[in-house]
Image (cartoon, rainbow, N blue to C red; front, side, top):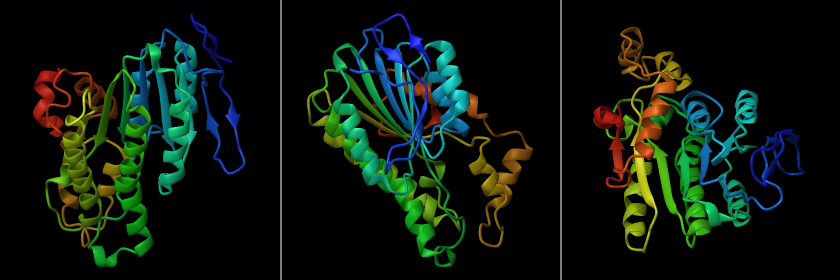
Length: 293
């Protein structure tokens, strides 16, 4: 049990399985999702490892309600939330099937009492390489799954988020985690790069839509740089015959050019909280590092 933490909102941590639902661990607001201490709501996908897990850790606070969606829940994250008295919810969800996840998010947001909230933020961080190879060599189901996780799921969740929070008297933000590959063409990268290029462009279009309404959401698609994660290891372990740029990623690792997940998370969140956020809809963090020190 988390118990109470200086307010009226009781918290509990448990492992629950509902019929038709995957298990999740939770620090669940009960029963009204309201507490005057909670000022900011963060919703993030891909929070169980790498930069996503580090972002979730850095967001933990008694003043933040954090909802994480990943294929697996993080016991360590739940324990850290408990020790800090920080409200945390973790859903185990498969973003290769995003429509029910978007519907679940819509229903969950409908139960939130936003009276004390200053901001609500969606971070679309989950992603998969699929396969780094010429497109014709990739099995159709791999193509479908990768595009669904990397592009369709962020679209579905963004639509659900904007619809649910449209009338909220809060600052609304969407941060899409993109990649330098969205701008740099490489042999063997058609699948992943096209999904991230799509993310960049739907972010541009959403930003234009939101600029047309009063107090519209701030939308940014952000390339976080090269980070020492499992995805980088996949690139280094790829087949050079299928992915000719493999040597570049090996050199990045051996030369010490990779950013740690912890530091990358700090930079990304520093930009999320920076007054400049939303002034550009597509951003590469490398160009912003000096102002984020």
